[in-house]
Image 1 (cartoon, rainbow, N blue to C red):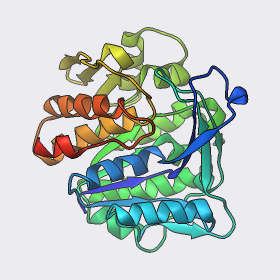
Image 2: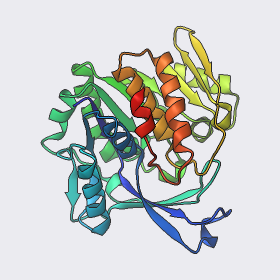
Image 3: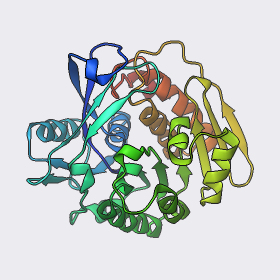
Length: 301
């Protein structure tokens, strides 16, 4: 494996219209979703060998997801198919800004490590995890097992702190858990919304200092239409301005940004240089509804 993701895979039901409230939506369209899984799909389309460790229900949506993963040549031997949990579903408003959503969680609350999972980690080069993999006591225990295995095998580890209080089911708070996991993490990429969800409303400098105080080494702070900022714990910094001209839907744009960063790192680029890949991938994603986008033009990079 070149790349392995651990966390949620799910169905996004995205509203057909641009409206203000989910309660007012009359129709939705089904899309493949889940941040760790989206990144696997994106990278696999660029001929990267990817694997996903996640959980689905033995139900029609789970079967749809499994077929999608296999069709995109993603290693599914670390997947668990549950008779006791349903496949997760997230209803999402189609949006040109941060989309509103409501999650119906089951499988992602009870992520498992089957007998293949840790072997897949030890064979990989890059590991990606999301905050959903920290959001229950059960999940957190498994996440630490994966992080320790990844560190033993010198993997580059990226963490998406896509925390929202409504999704948090852990007995511990997000700040305490970040203190415990950030020493393992090479790169953290919060959005401005993520920062506000974790720390409350504050300045960008305050958010960056908070993450460094918790043990972050490299931070990419994405700012939507304002681009992104990179800073590391040695005071090296870089601004990446946005060049986006068209936005159809923001669903999956952050996952596309991650995909570009990882693609750059796999091609021996520095984190700083890889950010330009991230911007290019994200801006291509913004032209589509849902997380999937035409990546064929990017194969020439």
